Image (cartoon, rainbow, N blue to C red; front, side, top):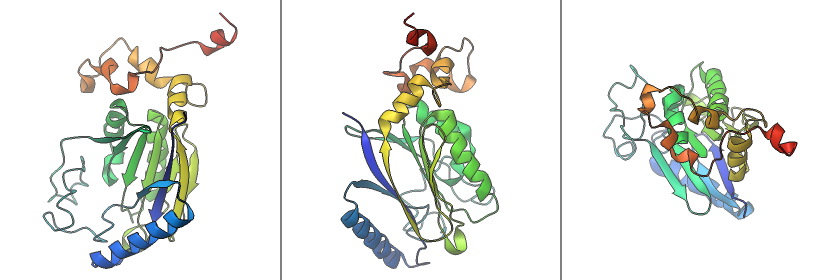
Length: 248
């Protein structure tokens, strides 16, 4: 049975400093999309969507989330304590998802670790209004390519976000990219494609995860445990598919 999963990335302008109004707006969008497209099973919004803008640590809205970001944007978010765990979760009969937030995507080790832990889809809410948004788009593609996974990057719009949210597939292809206005991006993810890309290689060429497993040296960050990553469960050995095709 194929592992299809419907997602909707919601790029929308929030109601600044009015959490209840923003939540109502989110609820309305979810209701409208769900009524029209009942196959959508997950909605992804941008970072700090409820409050609309960043608030001090310990605020009512930020408290539940402050421990998730592994890398706060230092020195600008110096009052935020970084988290020390990686966030992954399983959806039964679908697959494993990973979460990183905003500046986390600038550190290859974060998304790499989520993928090593078995994540097939990376959710990346952000709130970027600065000129490096173009660079972030490159990073989103790079993270998808390096880790052979879906990468869903949802940015805010308006005074605190420059939009241009995007969804990238495991081969690094941009499936959808929004502009700078309210946009609902819906996509049916095929998590079997993640497995195929990791098994046969990016664009059918580069079996990077399998080759990495066979690396005879040691990467200090993995402490000699690289081959024990969840990603390798069910992933075959490095193979010459040309020889296989020839029946050898």
